[in-house]
Image 1 (cartoon, rainbow, N blue to C red):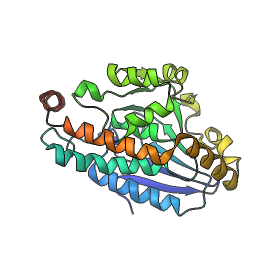
Image 2 (tube, helix red, strand yellow; image 1 turned 90 degrees about the horizontal axis):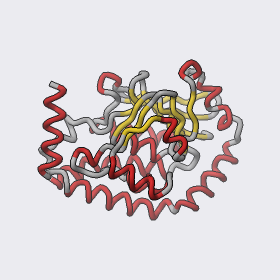
Image 3 (cartoon, rainbow, N blue to C red; image 1 turned 180 degrees about the vertical axis):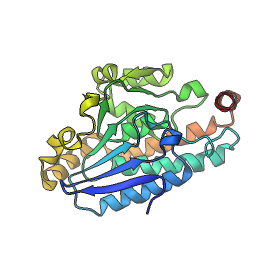
Image 4 (cartoon, rainbow, N blue to C red; image 1 turned 180 degrees about the horizontal axis):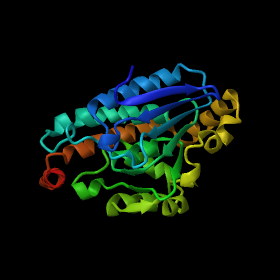
Length: 254
């Protein structure tokens, strides 16, 4: 059914979407963005306690946008169109009616961190690293994840992370509240144990708790902030700084 992702529903009462382009570090292509929306819509139609989003392989959760689709030659208008597709995916995650859990199987940068931030909870495999690195590429977050970051961690740290664009390890980010739990590598593949606390709840409990949380963060208002972020990023797309950064990256990759 899907080419770039895997979708599964488990008897314990949850569904899981797996980014499945390990040879590309699970980078998000135009096709994957479309399939993610379809999978999230499918999950909404299920009676589940929670939704899990993870990546295939052990090296990367997601390396952000695929530069074959999000290259530096796009006009701001074209960039907005491409970026907005993933903004819609992130908002689908943010507004999902039961908890969303990101299992960070590997490292994530850029848009990968935006996807993780859209989820309600982030559980990381030990020794993983994460970075909102967009400002090192002459742009800003472009899928709405930067706006969401301010809701997930202290605003001063969010502001700092977006400017310094550093890559931090999971332990540091747990202290900052972005990572909720770190799982030892030898226990990583025991999903039932990792997700036990969520599995133990009923669908009705999860719906009530999730609704209360969504009311607190003001989900509808977040959509407008995310839209503004996409517009601002698109304006920077054809800037000299971004074009040079993308060309340098592509040259290094050969």
